[in-house]
Image 1 (cartoon, rainbow, N blue to C red):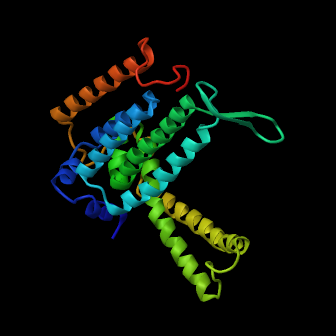
Image 2 (cartoon, helix red, strand yellow):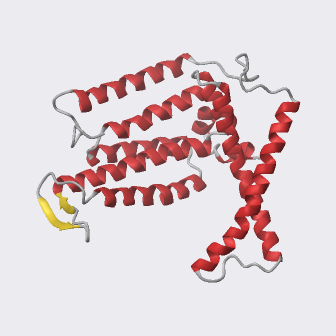
Image 3 (cartoon, rainbow, N blue to C red):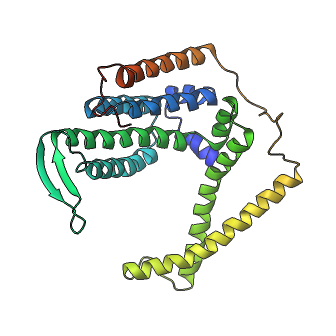
Length: 281
């Protein structure tokens, strides 16, 4: 079973998922791009946590495969926590809770009330962006991604290369499993030994994986040349490219107007709604 069929099986838990899969690929791409722009507009964690709750509600209503949910809890949770802690001591504005400095270089560090808000906001920003990007990349097939890029005016060559990258991921994973099993037959135990020994053993897997990937790239290039494939063909089109629906266009316009209005309220208006530091992104 290929990756596209597995994605289809995992992403059809209900009626909402089937409707979402039948939507225009360009609509899905632009919709997630617009939603992903909202966390970069605001800095206040109180607003960003509301955005996170709305995004979680959205992906849950569409259909959230367990693998995507578990991966997001790991990547989004660790990434958001690390970002919040790393930004926390580098804000000098507000009432200080703690002051210190970096040893040897004497760089000042402080934790303030505004700094806590700033760190939480940056962590929630990463959590929002990771949720939307991971959900789109895991649930959308490479073909739908390429069709989405083509429908919004991005050259076909870029969309095709982007789709090839994601088609290579399961193939590289399968190659790594095959190489690891072959090395285990020869007596190499990857999961045994100290950390240094494990890193050295993984180097034994890396070299064959690189050469097998390069060999596959050459095979794909030869296959495309044999079929007369032209990356710069401006007349290239997909046989089953869907048409834009009126509801999709109206919904995109509505979301775009909402994003522009929120951007004006947060970044341009004197009140700077939901922004802690107007000079920072």
